[in-house]
Image (cartoon, rainbow, N blue to C red; front, side):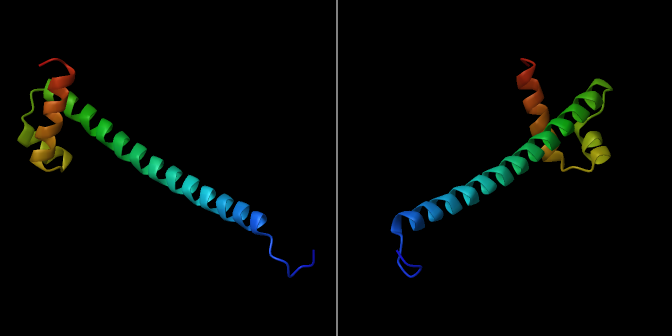
Length: 85
């Protein structure tokens, strides 16, 4: 076989390997983004819990954490559901 002959099997394997690697990298990137978002949500939830224990209102918490009040209220609902309220 000379250098000008086309090796279809080799070409398919190379294409598959490149596609697999691209998919793997995309998955890692997506996973990191999801993990970061989940971590930020968990941190915010813990901060809200602490402030609720200190008797703060959702409006005060939203102001202190510089978050939209609707976000704070939604997370408070989630806290209540986790604790069986």
